Image (cartoon, rainbow, N blue to C red; front, side, top):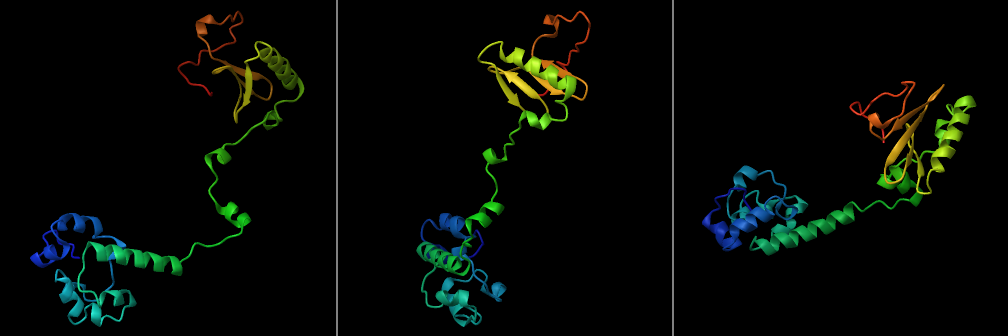
Amino acid sequence: MPQNEDLSPEWQAELGSNWRDIQAKWLHTIGNLTLTGYNPELSDRSFQEKRDMKGGFRDSPIRLNHSLANLDHWNDSEIQRRAQELAGLAIKIWPIPQLPPEIFSKYSKPSAKEEAQTYTLEHFGNFMQGDVGELFNVLKKRILNMDSSVKEEVKKLYIAYKTTTNFVDVVPQKRQLRLSLNMEFSEINDPEGLCRDVSKVGRWG
């Protein structure tokens, strides 16, 4: 079937009254594709001419064209039939590799759930020693004792304490614990001036 949008009367008759829809649907699909060294000569000729002319489908040494040599028409049903035939042939030639489960799992893309990294407090082991570790344990106990709904969630860069959302994030550091509180800065009781407003800077969690 030619690519020319203005098909000849022969091709319009071959494809039927809805020839435009058939051309648009099947033009660049496997059922309508083949190989030939005479593409310029075949061009927009009718199917029968492409079949019978020198270098045409009946004259072609290419195995892919053998099924076209004995056809009298090229239309919607023949294109679909050939597509199924070639698809079946492709499956036989290039079957899906049958790999042992251990090999398949090794090279399979992990699911989003598998990709999600799980962290524990041991992730911060280098910072959880000495005075910093003792201070963290005291702080953790007091936070969790605030309410039974409070949960601890260990992230890559911080440790979150939350109910419906994070209300404090703890970042263990070498000589101290840095806390990020999810509250208005004006509500903090900070007589020693240790706190800093980072509401416009951004925070984790």
